[in-house]
Image (cartoon, rainbow, N blue to C red):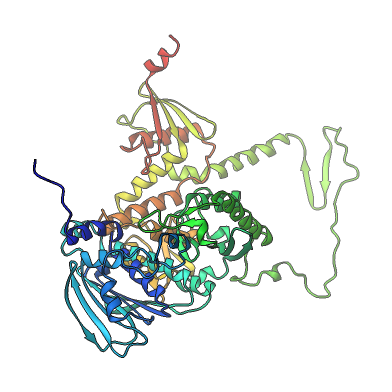
Length: 605
């Protein structure tokens, strides 16, 4: 029998191994930036062309490499961080496996220029698909510059699965943010398609957070700092008002290494407790310092999952620490007039103005037991006979006021032979309508049905949604990444009634919005559009229109369930049943349940 097992060629083995390390352009940026940090760089520049598809260039002013080290760096498992197995459990540097450069070179055309601080001349190496094409001296400055071109040029199947440029760029920004937050003493510069996109100068941690995520973070961060025998905890947590639905801006670091862990996130969320609205998550930037021998960073190829020997105890300490800082800062709902007009004059009295005590007027001769008694007040004559009628108008007016807004939504009661026959309607639990229509039983969720009707109405003709101007322009400050997304969707927002203009690199001004949008929530609405926007599988315009219509419908739909008259219920049921999509909301929640009488009768058999 012939032998069939053989060793793979190095080029093939490296391409297979690269699948774990190099998943997309962001993986290349992560590995090369971490190498620059390990080289003691104080300035790092990331230059991208076509979101890394065409070119990724990482330049640093670190200590550089010698000619021999530059060549050895591309060999698999070549590293300066580990000499024996015990070193794996004492790691404080970022890259240590010696896989990154070999994997990157296996799926790209890579150029390296480097000069050691003690060398007079540098080295230039060009590699394509693991094959060294040239190595020669080069008059480059101290430090290292990696240029990675045509990523996945020799694995077209993997290149085909890359997302759009904007999506890939967002992945790259996420990696840069993680590294920049962990190293505020390093200056980071991002160049996108030949133009400086952002620059984060060195400073302290809070300055770095504000530089990346905007000035709105300045007043919403609470410092946290605690230390025990097993861990030191420090960083910042956000006030509840800064919570968002997508859980963005949540960062954990251990020994300056970013990681994700559900148990730690659970500890932070338990600390906030009922301070947060449902399904909203606060921003936080929490750093842990722990003995390297108490953690294992080698359990995941990308090193984002870490094993802790004292995980339970650390989680308990973390929850207590966050609770403590929230308690010390009296985090409770409050009114903030810092950016508004001076309201103190509304409550202050004029100087030297005499204080007039309140007075009570009464009729000392009034006898409530005399039926024909007249009640006299100064300048007033009235008869108490038929006094109940006074309250008839009061109840009628009150009921009319309660139902005015709701009645306007559904108009007059319709009557037509083509409409379904509504035999009976009643409202129960204030939340549902039970209706007998065309010999079937309908159970309708009022709020969801109203949302469904408004959604379909708005979607029929977006151009007919009227725009209301704001009394004062609303300024919105966003991050670099959010500004990029908002600029992408800005034309579509303007088409459907939003009057928004760019006020600077990361600032926008809202001058108007569709009339059904609550202007007190306009900033949160715009931020929701940004955070939930995805352009991967849908046309940009279609995607944003769906989100806008959904947001408008939710803003305009009923805030609470009203008390409805029979006429209003009848009109409402007709509109719901006449709508083709009356059974579910746009998100798939049940609006209407239909019960066949036969099914109900079977319950009694």
